[in-house]
Length: 200
Ligand code: ADP
Ligand code: 5GP
Image 1 (cartoon, rainbow, N blue to C red):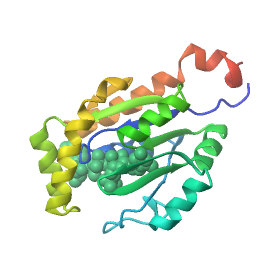
Image 2: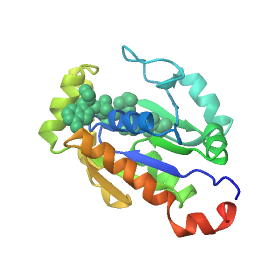
Image 3: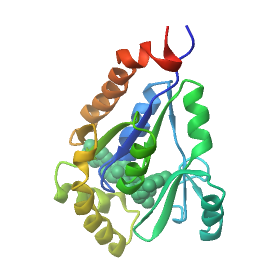
């Protein structure tokens, strides 16, 4: 049997909901996942590594990537540009890895349009109050940026019905199990096993 292509998993949700936390925990416990490293014009936070958390780019470098058609999707978010480099995603999927995209709602809509087979998951925090607490406790954003991120969260909530799955990240252990289960269930779809590239 030919090694099946991987599945493409979109994870969105307001900043501070816990996307990075949950994705990195699921990735650590499975060896069939690759995280898609995005490009961004945002400045690195303390502890972030270029090429691992993001590819940190100047505005000009980012524009060049757009011109070169290098992105699967890209969007503006709270004053900065973010985009998913297309080539590594395609290569990883072809090699049989499941690829997780941690992207905001406008970029997610572009991927859903281009790749209707993508699995989409919206991660909610238990409440807006808890979201604010998490953003503050993370200690990475200025007061102004926290306010902007909270305002954006309200708009993002309205897009949750576009997603195939919803996870409420109250207890992180439960959220990790749920994301893991979604990926496992999607890999077991008969369509996925029996059709196209993955047929027996
Ligand atoms: P995002 O990637 O969605 O912006 P992070 O993963 O950076 O969010 O999480 C924001 C903050 O909330 C971090 O300090 C993280 O440790 C914390 N956090 C994540 N999940 C939980 C949870 N289930 N309970 C409590 N705190 C959490
Ligand atoms: P942060 O600045 O907190 O790392 O990310 C801010 C927002 O940008 C998050 O909602 C995150 O999901 C989103 N994001 C990260 N990478 C990308 C990307 O490549 N494309 C899009 N559209 N959004 C991204």
